[in-house]
Image (tube, rainbow, N blue to C red):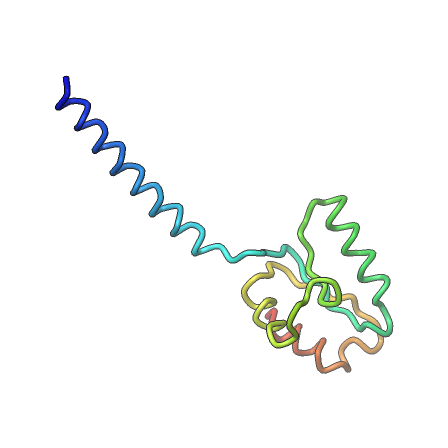
Amino acid sequence: SLSMLGTLTFAAMILLCVAAFIHGLFLHGHVNPYFHHFICHHKADAAAQARYLKMIMDKKFRLNTFIDSDDLRDLDTLFDIITTRVSQLVVYLTRDTLTRPWCAGEITAAS
């Protein structure tokens, strides 16, 4: 009957609104882009090796890996990205990595 069709339409609209609200909450809680790993490295000593490691992790293991020389658009946001959008820190340790202020800051931001 017509009243049954109206009731079903109203219920479907309510369910659609609830689903849209839940979906919005889900998207709000997940920051994009999200990176599985951040590779901290000293560019003068290990830039090529760090990029190669990123390529392996991205392709072979299908992990989204962040490396600042490839993915960073604004230097002012680096520590915020590490703190909020990275799951694990990978430190490509060379003799000068821990002497570089940016590397020390990246390690500190990740902990």
